Length: 200
Image (tube, rainbow, N blue to C red; front, side, top):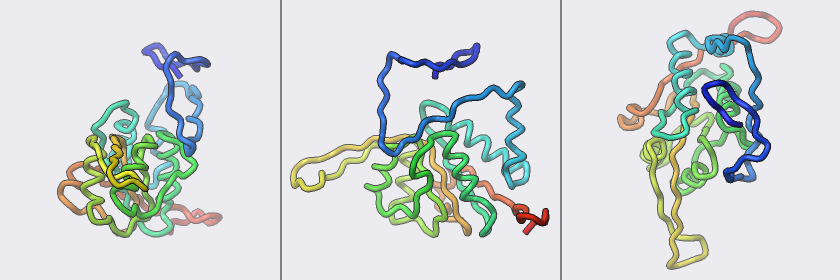
């Protein structure tokens, strides 16, 4: 897709080469919505206006081609729809077969995921592993990571990444000062129960 100040168009044979990862899904096809009023998004977010604006600020920042990027830390009670909302945000920026990941295991896994994606999205976190908070900070601003190649004693492999990050949790896992300073904290509210129109 080619985007200019006058609009956009689908380019069938682009001149540049694109890197394709097996986990990637096709990008969403843009559809003109008339006046392009971004405030329409608010009706789909179960949050008050202030928390909606924080989420929107993160979403717009995540669309920038270069970092650094802020981190979005979504907190909500059980059954609030935070996982569904996180999937929607992920699909806008980086549609992927594995849209949400579970607790990250170590720094190597985080870096591999960051290098092969346009964003990281971890759902229902209960904790951050040792070094995980620092790694998220570095990826949000851009970093490199060297480690020994698997099945090799003397060879190194290098990962480089800078991408938006989305974290969801019930109790909140972003509590270290360095990670807090790079994060938008957004809290989702309650959602309507199906068939009753009542909030829960």
